Image (cartoon, rainbow, N blue to C red; front, side, top):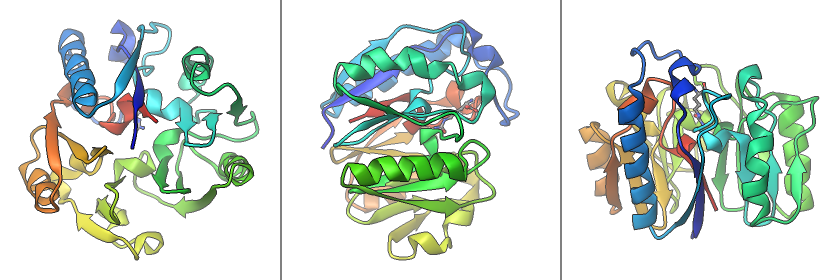
Length: 253
Ligand code: CIR
């Protein structure tokens, strides 16, 4: 169960955020409306939400998931692989320290973005991407081990972040996209394949029994509902233009 979430309001500079989507520029006002609805969805799932102010110096700063890993036993501040995002970490620390008195930090020799990390109980899958490297992943695994948890590195080649193509919905159910349909590391899960024309919906989020699903992906929505989950759609069109998915917009703990 999760009880809290931390989010950060999008900034106007989001128009110059990192992207490979080729879907045009986001509309800032619409992004703010969608962000408000996202917060409502978190609250509907029973979470208390800490809302941080916009950070104009960092165009991608609304994607707070990448800058920290919050586990039941410890909090780890990451070191993003994207140069333009590195400074975001110091701005999240105070908000996290309110709930975790001791913060651990990935050192400068390695890089990790927590969009590459998927929690399954006490185990953490760490995708090796253009943003997360082996030096960062091994530091992270050492920290997890010190706190009674485990980690493993996942080779991947196509996705921005691990959770771009994978979402764990608890009860052994795993949404997969692309290379993750057949990835050997996930052979023991009940894999639910998301079709290529709905790839964006592979980033859906389980929160306390409800699954948040991006709006506009009917086949994915139906598959998730057939598993017995309650669902809540959230329109994410403006964040999709920046390669950002549902999980990226919050830290849940
Ligand atoms: C970036 O490229 O860093 C942002 N435009 C999107 C980050 C998405 N975060 C995530 O998948 N966890």
